Image (cartoon, rainbow, N blue to C red):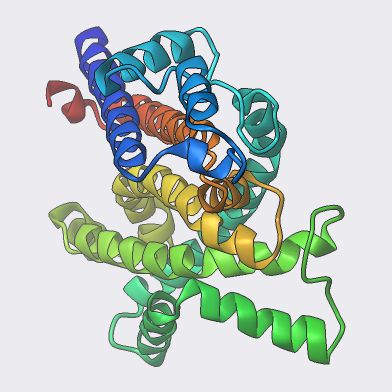
Length: 305
């Protein structure tokens, strides 16, 4: 058990380092951040002094190692746009993103479980075809298009719900539904496939031969084992929801990390972009490490992997 967790933790650290390195390299190749800071009346000497003060005159590998050493201590640099520590700006917006992602995940799981179980237990029926058709539409619809349609219908025409900002449960409904739709569709299909696999096993056929009620077979004997792979999918899904929040937060003006990251990219605020991506990677990897830990208890066989 201990060796399994150590291997997972080591892999998690490699992922975080890899993400930070790739992000830093892409930003380094994308241009000089001082281009957005200098005016037309600046002299060459003033520009060079600014670059030196920011450490941009050093080789990029030195810049990266300096960034990593400071990031380990919680110093991600200062935002070029807001003139505040990047970590503080992100910390202010983390609760909003986590709130949106958690509510979307909750909607997805609560609806996907009964839909997937019903489709699997009544395979080939109208319930099965209807559930899979809805799942297909959910995965096919672009997130930005669905968000705009919800704004148009419930915000512009019906005036039922606010369409932007954060504050109050009513402002969370539309962005959460938009973010949850794709996850709901995928989780429904995963739960259905897992249930069908378990329902075809020998011990389930034995239970049927003994005359147990179908409801008891599905909800007591089959459901528990079918949920083991679903735990991993849900953990990965939360990470995908954090990534999808970039689009949803932009559409609904939700003050989270995703919207802050988009604004930082447009402003060429490199320290803020680097910090946002790195912290998002840490959150994603931490959640997956927690899922691995839970999974090792649900299925002891994974400890040998």
